[in-house]
Amino acid sequence: MLTKRKSRSVAAILAFSGTLTISGLHKFYLGQPLWGLLYVLLSWTPIPKVASAIEGVWYLALDEEAFDRNFNLGKSLVKHSPQVGNQVLVVADAVRELDALRQDGLISEYEFEQKRRQLLDQIS
Image (tube, rainbow, N blue to C red; front, side):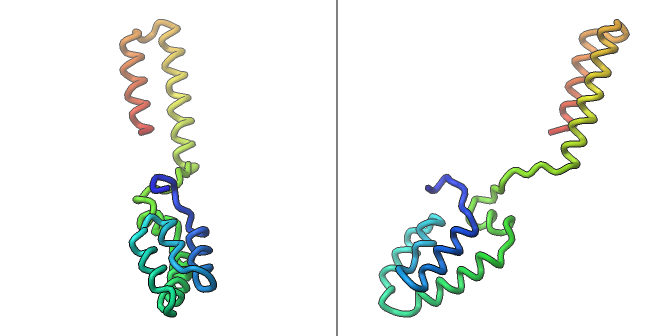
């Protein structure tokens, strides 16, 4: 479970459920077992329940990027922006044009490969 991507909404639900049931489940989910154990050990006091409620609100207040930075080792879901998609289309068109020039004999195989690599490096 330590390598799976953590969900902000699941963490918030577990935190809020800790105000009614066993506190600390959200800490185990987020990969913080020592804090989770502390919440369970202090469950006879109101401290973990109040802390769970505060953390549930905090998780909901965080945007996805901040949550990922804190609990997913900074890794967010890969989202392709329209700008990256347009850049790929432009590079693909340029490679097609280069291929046409190569097939017509206007550029050599070596020149084609050099230009193709330069264009593909622009995407990365």
